[in-house]
Image 1 (cartoon, rainbow, N blue to C red):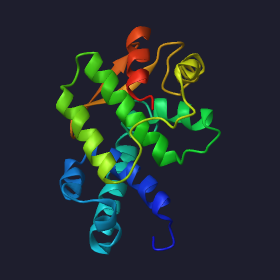
Image 2: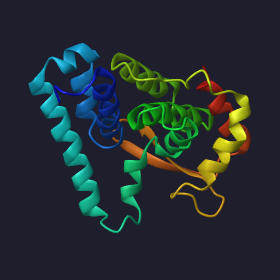
Image 3: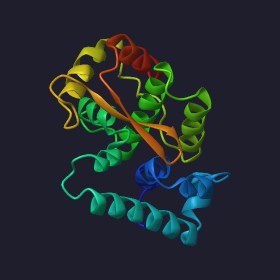
Image 4: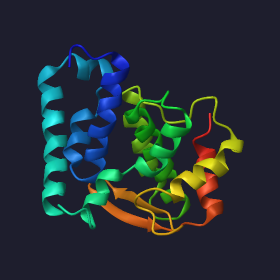
Length: 194
């Protein structure tokens, strides 16, 4: 871990934070009041966070080995994240794209009436504290929206043209949002524009 750049360390933390939101809120508790420097400098904390995230992933995969249902929660933030990652020609690290993807889906869930605004604020605060992006890079504009929508429709969780999202209603509690209205999808996109 000591050989990782600051940016790569932070990008890796995005997946750890995702595990906190979807399954192990203790991860979020451990990060409360921390910043990227304090996590980098605390090897014991870093090992604990990584261990907890690996446990989340292993438990989910073991419970849904054939990726039929539960395992989809590991894709939290990835539907939009994969779309922007490829659209950026991979100038965004995977974890950075997932970070923005988690904000996008939190905004989408709030606009759909599934979560309160404080859950969105919690996402923003923890990701910002770890120096992860919560909005798109400057090259993204409203004009990118049609291509991103097409990309999300071809996501592996989509069923036909029905886009499916994993949403976090509260830390450790997930639900699925299927086929949200296109106007709400676009409104959530506008909330993550630079």
